Structure formats: structure tokens, C-alpha cells
Amino acid sequence: MLNKIEKRMLKPFIGYSEERDEYQQGEIHRILAGACMHALYLTSGLMLISLIMDTIHHTFTFGTMALFIVQQFLAYYILIRLRKTGVADTEYESDADYEQIINALKKKYFLAGAQWGITMFILMEFLFPALAGEKIDIGLFNILLWCTTGAAFGIITYFLQKRNIKKIV
Image 1 (cartoon, rainbow, N blue to C red):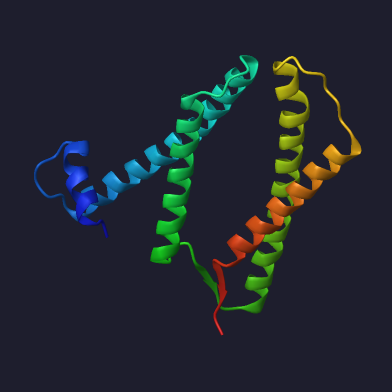
Image 2 (cartoon, rainbow, N blue to C red):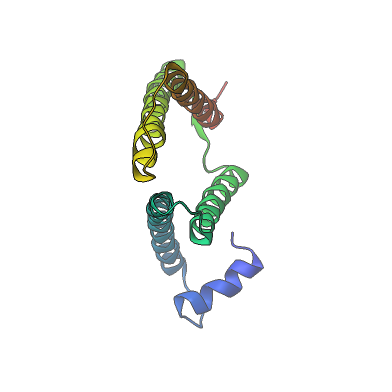
């Protein structure tokens, strides 16, 4: 259910004056959800491009910080609203289904942690120093740092997602 402010913003944003039926409201929300997903990915990409440009020019601009704030606002707003409404929860009656989904989550977030660690290692140890004109110096500490943070990312996201999986007793 939309709150008062969202309802007041929706009519002029979409461009209608009369109330819409359930089908029309559903389509409007489906389209807006798709646009929000595209905006989140586009903002993330633009933020990365802006950060690369800042690195090349040895600056940190307002645009990069503004894109980061917008991206984080969207992500947390969606996360909080989904959790508040309970639509992110999935319930399983059988032990087999529950165990199967938990094992799938473990694999998924193990790979996500490894991917995040490798991506950050490449960005922070190769790409950004190269773009900044700095010497690339990789030591054992750097490798352990990104392996550890990648593992932490995978474990934290696994437990955050596992909270949404419920076993009906």
C-alpha cells in the first residue's frame, strides 16, 4: 500500500488525473519497478565510470559521491520496504525443499563472495593504481585482504538471505 506522499507523487509523475483500476495500477507498478531496477544498475555503472575518471584525474568529485548516495538510498529503501512488508520471505513445508534451497544459497553466496573478492582485488590492486599512474605492488597481505573480505561478503549475504527462508513447522 502506498503512503500519502507516494500517492500524491504518482499521479503527476505518471500523468493521470483519475483513479486507476487494479489492472492499471498493477501495470503502473510493474513498469515503475522495472525502471527502478534499470536506474539502480545504471547508477552503479555511472558511479564506477565516475570513480575511474576521478582516479585518472586524482580527484574525488561531488558527482561520484552523489551517485553513490543515490545508489545506496535505492538499495536500502528497497531492502527495508521488502522486509517490512514480508514479501521477501519464502516459506517451505518439507525438510527436503528447505535443505535444498539452503544448500543452493550456500553455493550461490560462496561464488558471490569469491567473485566480489576477485573483482575488488583486480580493481583496487591493478586497475585503479594503473589509472592513477602508480606502481602496481601486490603482496601477500593484499591477497589475504581481498580473500578475507570476499569470504566475509559471501557469509554476510548468505545469512541475510537465509533470514528470508522460513521452515513451516
